[in-house]
Amino acid sequence: MTQTVQPSNAPSLEVPTNVPTAVGRPAALKRRVPKYADLAPLMKFKKPEFSNAARLRRASTIWELRDIAKRRTPQAPFDYTDGAAEAEITLRRARQAFQDIEFRPGILRDVSSIDLGTEILGKESRLPFGIAPTGFTRMMQSEGEYAGSQAAEAAGIPYTLSTMGTASIEDVAAAAPNGRNWFQLYLWTDRDRSLELIERAARAGNDTLMVTVDTAVAGARLRDVRNGMTIPPALTVKTVLDASYRPAWWFNFLTHEPLTFASLSRYTGTVADLINSMFDPTLTFDDLDWLRETWKGKLVVKGIQTVEDARKVVDHGADGVVISNHGGRQLDRAPIPLHLVPEVSAALKDSEAAVILDTGIMSGADIVAALALGADFTLIGRAYLYGLMAGGRAGVDRTIQILEKDMARTMALLGVTKISELNPDHVRLLSK
View 1 (cartoon, rainbow, N blue to C red):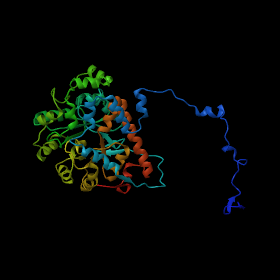
View 2: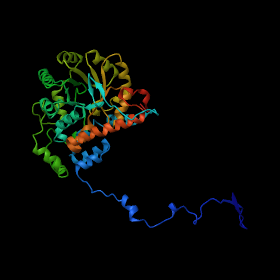
View 3: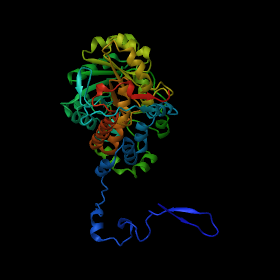
């Protein structure tokens, strides 16, 4: 029912009679002085926490761990981790590829329980990712490879030790005796030295050898050039000034065992000089045949960037391939690993070879996307190192926790409960 109001100088207006007036305003909308009993439940002030452990707990993304890492680590080692080759186009494109994924969720599925376990190279992994090989790791944070291998052991995932590692094969095996340890090999011009490393890896219980094939020469890592990056870090005026803002890093660096390459003779100089002087630019598929005959465990080739090469290395005996452009640290404008996954997966579908992806992963959703497109497994490098620099072993644990939580949430929202249920129907590449 309406009431017509007719001012003498205005057209008629119809005003609804059921609009509450000030007198009829609901009690909940009337202003009043708040009572202490109402405010008390809202006043839950917590004591501020400024410890690094508290910062790690508050970090909910890998990017936030990166921010902590940057504050705690001198510029040269941070940039060594964070940077890439030349204009760093490859790294940006690799990360952008994951951002350009569109997920296609299914609804009305029971996702009350999510299983993230999978099988890789003949053994179970509790999560569908492992820790990638990274060199000079104790330079990023004094716990280095020990933190990475022990965190991987606790999480039930593989850990890969680099030839360029700063902890020995034997020491890593002793630090994580129940872990699944892999060894990454750079073939040197001195084959006897390479053979020695292979034999040591086998004796220490490593079940997988990962040979990296994309370092015929060193990439142009310009951040390292600008920072005057050497191994070990040199004390210059610049580094001393930098240290004044990050005393904990320098205290740890100076009060622990000197930084050396555990698998190499003592070396002093730039990273590029080391690669160019020691690694073999004459490698061919014949060398892969020699490795296959020499190594009795699983053999994986890292640095695959074309479908043709993926087929070839499997034909020469590889048990798996790692689609990787070395984190964008070698050839700038290299192929984007995520874009290659569907083609490589299709090309190897009739073999038993594992398809593994690295480069660009910064979230659990990235891992889910790679698995849906056809990867069997993934590796994390920078993501783990950001955690390491942010807080040592606790930071690596936090990295794994963040990725695990991301994956479980993403899979539940997609409507899948197991890794095996992921398929290309769950994703779409928006651009390529």
